[in-house]
Amino acid sequence: MTYLLLVLVSIIWGIIFYRLVFVSSSEPVLSVNEHILPLKQTSNSVPDSFSIFANYRDPFLNKVVYAQVGNKIKVPPTATPVIKTEKVIIQLKWPTLTYGGIIKNQKSGKQFAMVNINGQENIMKVGDTVSGIQLLKVNMESIEVSFEKEKRVVSK
Image 1 (cartoon, rainbow, N blue to C red):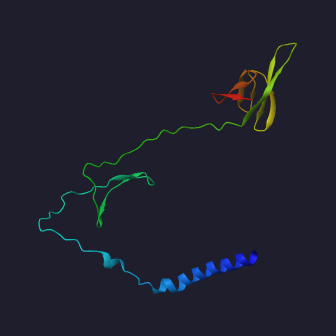
Image 2 (image 1 turned 135 degrees about the vertical axis):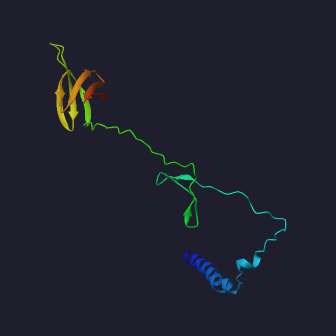
Image 3 (image 1 turned 60 degrees about the vertical axis):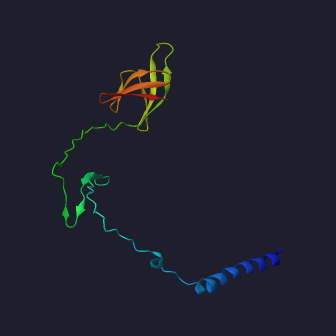
């Protein structure tokens, strides 16, 4: 079986080699220009009377680009520069918080929450502040905390 497959592969490669060397070099190469016919113009043709004004916003530079003709740039007479104002929103850098669970004292009924703040385990009661994080509410599944007057709910 191996010898039969070896002979078959040799025949296939022989055909490919023959076509690459002998057949492709004997075919005449046609020039593209030989098949293009010149356009016939009629004597009644009128030049176009429109112009394209390509003023568009460049998505990379985020400004308006005007059409360039020769060395001069055509700017429309009504074009005025657009001044954009942006609101600066200061975002707080919250520490990483995870809620571990609730601890309830059976005798006194006080509830404590196990809160991991930036990798440090803390046992907090409502009203406590650790690393700027104040514990506001404690539930079985989540806690409510505040950090610099911003509130968040952290789930288990």
